[in-house]
Image 1: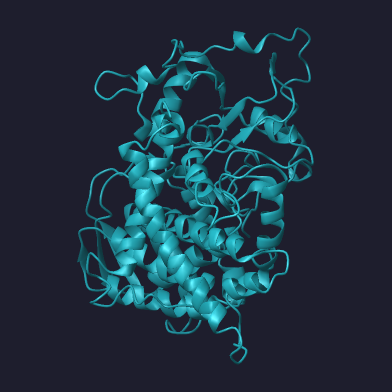
Image 2 (image 1 turned 180 degrees about the vertical axis):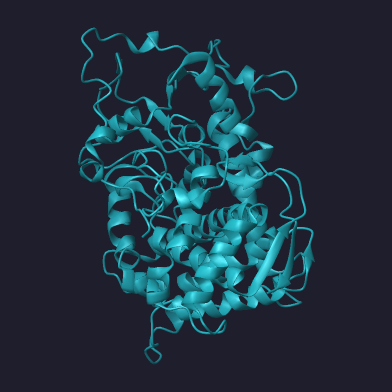
Length: 499
């Protein structure tokens, strides 16, 4: 049986954690927390300069490991002058951060340049959308948009079409040796995002759409450009607030194209609303019929889905295929599970198959442990909190370091090895992991709104690929590159053959 680590009461008494501040008697000042030295005007950005700096925005997990070794489990940094950041490594402290949220609306400091771009275009957007917006306006959007995504049946409605598209992808993979599967994965998840969001097939695998200047190619490039730019724009000197820097202009061009496609999709759907009712409505139709949302809200959500729906699942699936290719025994175990659940390899994958695919879920969980979607979870403290012996003031930017913590031997035996069985109850050597270690989709009300959909898509793909194909790795060691979300730092070189 698959183990879904969750609430504290599910943990054995020997593994339950206590508040990291519960035994603290002498509270110390936040400024006493160790960390790299900040300089006037440039903060600690000098440490991230190419060639001469000891840190790199491209390898935030490596930077985090260095900081943990040098300064300990809490690290204070003023990367941008006037903005206090606290890097948090220990799961007990991560728990304290989320406990401090209470029932308020969680806030974060992210996608700041995207917020400016949309704020400068009030004729198109009401706000910055779900990603950068905070406060009551964020909650208004979240409350309405999650209604159609939080119900399991709403996600299962797309299972049949999802399975059919993934079968097409598997047939493409079966052609043999691929120098890089990543572009094919990007096209697949663009198709799946467009199917659910707009009820539109992009035909991304067609000869025409494979061309560089096609709609699907440009959308994939726009998502990558945006996700590549945001981290540097958020954490640099932010000169884009005063004039259009070259990197900000790149982001604007990428967003303008996504916006163009989203506006077209919304307009087409509005024109066709009076036609006969479809068997199942796309998210776009559901949102356009919601009286608590207007056209500008829906356009922003359409852009957010294109931005978040392509790269996150693409990269996570790429890492899963990499680990399975490097670990033939795990791959064979997943094949056996898929063969038992799908006696006929062309049988449809339904909800019963997904529910019983325990090893596929364990593969996903282990992939998210080793290669999470991002380095951790960001929050802005809305009230004072105490972490260990330090009082952390309201307004501090917190970034949890789950990617680093999940590779520490004190939490996971043999932490660098890919061992999906550690997540299965029947594995006698397994132990219950701290529930605040593996958080690939975030936490609480601000967690990924499309989590169910992403997990369903990944699970179907893993079952289909391993049911029909055997695959091996043809590259070197693969690491992640930090682009706000974690991207493989080398091509996904796989060789496929039919079983």
